[in-house]
Image (cartoon, rainbow, N blue to C red; front, side, top):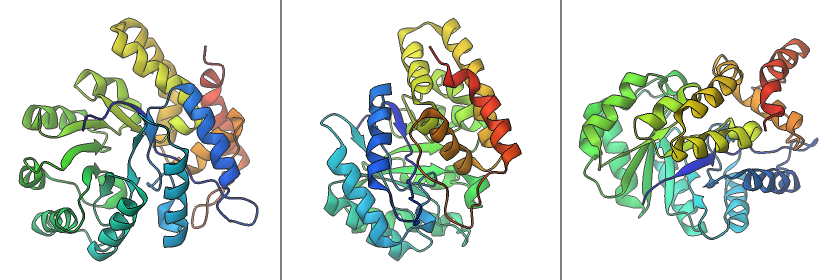
Length: 293
């Protein structure tokens, strides 16, 4: 399975009663499709899976699966703190119709290399799905080491790794070590163009929720071979991307959706709304992208 294009890591809209707002989700995804999104990644960290009940996660996965069209890639976020829960979530996603899942390391427990390798193998043994690994050590507290990747690289259903460490050297190392075995997936948004240059053919992109046209244009420009134009586009994107990486990522993404005309509500606690000053600062950073042409 070859992953390609911009795959938004979808936000989960919540209404005033703190319920999942499926009408808002439909409007939001329609706008992303019009901008050129290649597929959908629901129930990831940008989707606030950590604050959702199991039933809510199932309901969102079903909605996105029903919304998707032929040719659009579907990847379900099925992460949880315990291996048992990940297997249950992954089996539920498989039953809904997802053949691929995105799996970070189990949070809080900080598993060792041998524990992490056993974790992923347990999921692979239990459910017949493809796995895209998700390396995000600043968030999860542990890195998917090359020792773990060595143990998974020849498994036919470990197809890629979303690399969100922000370390370009690690991305280059992944390509040099695992080219043809594990696909490099861009997940460090403020250096996305560098990832493309080093072979990332897909971008699982949280910022695409609020800057889809710009992200998809960058992807198309790079594919066309116009590197000078791609550099200019990345320079325009960089300030907003860097703001997102500096903190309060999901809150800013959701506020950006509001600015783009597809409001998706605010985050669930413990994530609090942005202050007026934080909103103003992010709006200034996002301004060139709101006027993207």
